[in-house]
Image 1 (tube, rainbow, N blue to C red):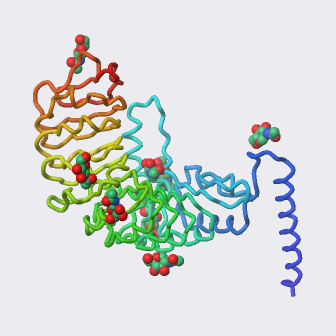
Image 2: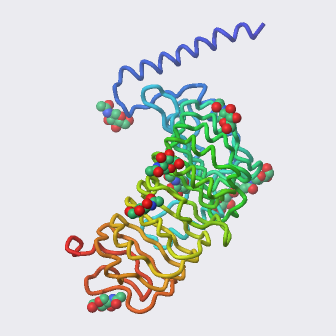
Image 3: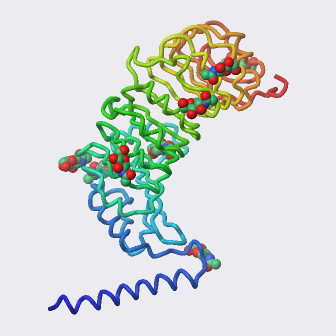
Length: 382
Ligand SMILES: *[C@@H]1O[C@H](CO)[C@@H](O)[C@H](O)[C@H]1NC(C)=O
Ligand SMILES: *[C@@H]1O[C@H](CO)[C@@H](O)[C@H](O)[C@H]1NC(C)=O
Ligand SMILES: *[C@@H]1O[C@H](CO)[C@@H](O)[C@H](O)[C@H]1NC(C)=O
Ligand SMILES: *[C@@H]1O[C@H](CO)[C@@H](O)[C@H](O)[C@H]1NC(C)=O
Ligand SMILES: *[C@@H]1O[C@H](CO)[C@@H](O)[C@H](O)[C@H]1NC(C)=O
Ligand SMILES: *[C@@H]1O[C@H](CO)[C@@H](O)[C@H](O)[C@H]1NC(C)=O
Ligand SMILES: *[C@@H]1O[C@H](CO)[C@@H](O)[C@H](O)[C@H]1NC(C)=O
Ligand SMILES: *[C@@H]1O[C@H](CO)[C@@H](O)[C@H](O)[C@H]1NC(C)=O
């Protein structure tokens, strides 16, 4: 009986809320004014919050209360519709710019003292139906560790960051349903063993036709050749990282591995720490748009090829930790025309003698190490 009486009350309450919400939206015309978030999405968020264990000393989840979820920390709503479109659980450690050790501190804290734990990812996230940006990199899963297949149903996602969440097992092919995805960041830091999380099959990635950014650091593909063939088909991919994935002999860059259109659009390539053996692969000379190249900590030997001097867009070059013994054409030729170069590391190789010049002020370096480069003064004429 009491039940029948409650219903109208609830309806009226809802209607009043709606009225307040809509008049607020229309009359003030201030685009930065708060919106009332949608009740069903707020409920979903509160359910999600319930599934998290948080260190009470941080403020992140404490802001998750009150009616307007759109002002809660880590969330953004679409201004026109009020739908939650962005959810970020970021690693929350304060970095002060003046503290020279802050980066190391941040790194160690990130690994050993994360902020938010969950035993599994709550499917309540599915009720945020318009979410297009999901960053879970501040979350640590410490229970059931498979990536839930339901993430593949969040079809509006264009950004998905699962870095260091601690998932294990096979990456589910259901992620192939995310056809709007532009960024997939899946890196697992050293804290997690590679092989904890792996790609059993890569073909689903070919359905991610909008993908521009793919980071699979520490997430080895069972069949590397298959993965690379799939990458050749992705029309927009320009950022690719696959570091720390292979044991010696597991992977090499063979002449047919990448095709010319893939190489030509690549701007960022990180294949560091993969036990790559042999000379620097000639195929890489076709990376005509490359800006960031990291082949550090492999077993590459021989000389740094002459064609490096043609890759003029390079801003970051890391070849540290190989067995390279010379630079074809010499260091000045290598660096010639690289007006964008800001970082170069050749340390821990077998390079000997004078590999650089100090006179033009190009860089400050020891015999083998050259970092934090100033813009070459005579770039145009070089
Ligand atoms: C809009 O809202 C912001 C923040 O709430 C406030 O600082 C600003 O003065 C408002 N502008 C107008 C025109 O009301
Ligand atoms: C919360 O984090 C602080 C700082 O990292 C730590 O000292 C404290 O023990 C943590 N508290 C809980 C309940 O985990
Ligand atoms: C993903 O999150 C990590 C950790 O916060 C961050 O370092 C990385 O830049 C993020 N990736 C992208 C593509 O924004
Ligand atoms: C991890 O999971 C266990 C079991 O559910 C729980 O007791 C613990 O508090 C969780 N959090 C951390 C940080 O280990
Ligand atoms: C998503 O992908 C999986 C595996 O590829 C497939 O079985 C499933 O039917 C797809 N779901 C939707 C909603 O497309
Ligand atoms: C590169 O490979 C993809 C997939 O095999 C193919 O669709 C594309 O036409 C190739 N491009 C060139 C220039 O060969
Ligand atoms: C790389 O470029 C060279 C010459 O520019 C060309 O002959 C070769 O076919 C290209 N290879 C690939 C895989 O794109
Ligand atoms: C570069 O030259 C300057 C002035 O000649 C000298 O003080 C400096 O020590 C040199 N740096 C290196 C790394 O050789």
